[in-house]
Length: 331
Ligand SMILES: C[S@@+](CC[C@H](N)C(=O)[O-])C[C@H]1O[C@@H](n2cnc3c(N)ncnc32)[C@H](O)[C@@H]1O
Image (cartoon, rainbow, N blue to C red; front, side, top):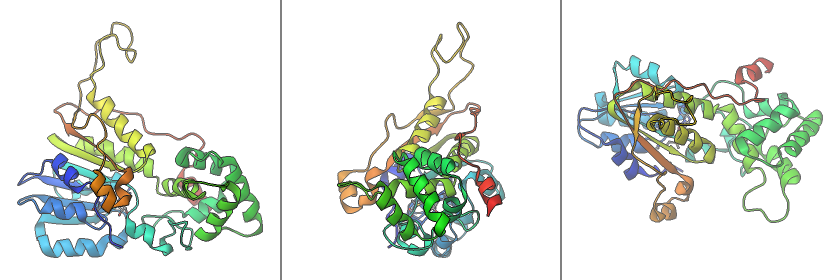
């Protein structure tokens, strides 16, 4: 199944497309947003995706739009390098549509789906450790922390203990085996979602460092956008949306004098680097959700870059979650 772009009209209008503008689509996928951006006369687009499987879609746009279009296979945390190598000094709009594409979920051999059996892989790119490496090599406490932090799974401890018991007999290498195990351990009577949903989400977020990637890409976007440039982000679950919301909030709110964020009597040392274009997250219309149920959890937030220095934020850390390099060293 090809991927239907989510909230396409809202994304294009938030980007405020203009002839002569340089735009970056950080999550190219099947190229739905890219085509729409290039559909505006005189725009140029640099598209990124870490998944090599999207290349045929990129080739098609290359043939159609020539020099106006470029594609780089890279994680979007490397946004600044990609823009510099493309020869652009700054950009007028950046969009991220985060998460997995329908093409990735629908191919059992990519290992994202608990509905169809495949190798327990889950990597969007083709490097680094797999979900099977995490499941078979990490300790019970580490797995439990991953399931709780990235899946908000209440049975995280039970799930991790069952994995450690099972793998002592046979390694868990298939999505079907993990899904069946989670159904036995976490399934109880009537449930709205499959009992393995949260554990699969947690492993996917961990293996692809999705939240770290997002935080780094947002900070890069702040550095690369020209004044009046637009940053538009579509997120699909609350963990991502919280990061986006907080990013825009701390950069758009001037702390009031005597605010609890500042020592008594100290003047605000900060001027906002973004103005908010969306006070609240924008949701898809009912019509869109009817025709594309995958859109139902989408939340769009957008901001316009102001002419102020970037905000220097502490990096995101997740205590108790092993670094992916540490996992790689175990493989
Ligand atoms: C939801 S799809 C995007 C669909 C696209 N907007 C369209 O209209 O076809 C998300 C895409 O982002 C890519 N992606 C996710 N995280 C990424 C990251 N950290 N770096 C680069 N690409 C990423 C995925 O491989 C996937 O192809």
